[in-house]
Image 1 (cartoon, rainbow, N blue to C red):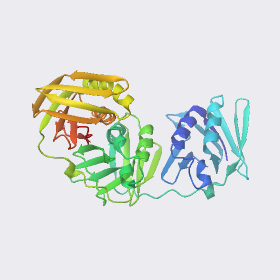
Image 2: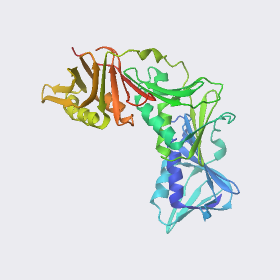
Image 3: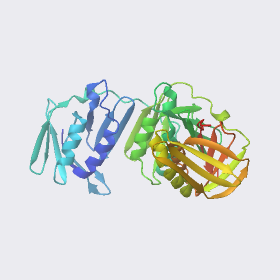
Image 4: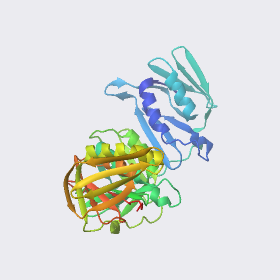
Length: 377
């Protein structure tokens, strides 16, 4: 293999590839990035057997030469070392040349590195995902859906299904649910369907988090394909494959009661910053607990730390209705929920002091955040 490639573009693609490489892999070869050069393109592959990323680099992009191929071939090079070397080199182009024993010479400017490589034939094959049925979303929409749900997945492995986001495919919409059993995030994609044999798929939160870092806020298409235990996202020159989580996701529909006892509508930004201020003392106490009181159409937030002091803040509510209520909740959960709602005003509906309450945009029900209160009284 002998090639010359535009260094800055190469670094961007290698950084994407690195997102699939985990230092905790049981197969040593998976610490490497596989480079496969054919007559007209280079394919980079990174995998930790849960996430796999495959990136295709053409010789030209928009009539600009990116890659010059003198000899085809393939090699696996230790991921982090290789990427660090390419980043620290100078010059516009970098040259790679591999011999029969997979030793790879890397030259740019006046620098020359020699890296030991491995036989690419030893690299595991990527899972096959059929592209018969596909769902197409814009990159910006998919990134938003991930940001509105993924923060609520469980970080504990005791119930593995809760470490993923449950995608449910209905006749007229798709819903995305994440919960760690203390809070829940639900996003609905209305008027969108997915012709697939599966009725649902649980995608690991870790995979979605890495995918979100790669996606841009653009209208570029992302094509999504499902197989029995894998999902494939095709985005530009990249194929991102993740395994699906096995098991039954809990039925969360019964968590949403019909009739609220108390409803408060507030400005999202103002309420967020009020929570942020009041939580300063809550964080000091180590439990993040904020008390919220709705009384005589007034809304008040309070918190205290025995060592530091107390804080009270009145909140401007544009609308309150129903019974008076006192309730306590985790300030971090509330701030995460408010961040996930891209609406100027939010409605908070309470169903009693010890039942979960919901936060929704005041003008739609596409996003629902649900939080379990904390018993303090």
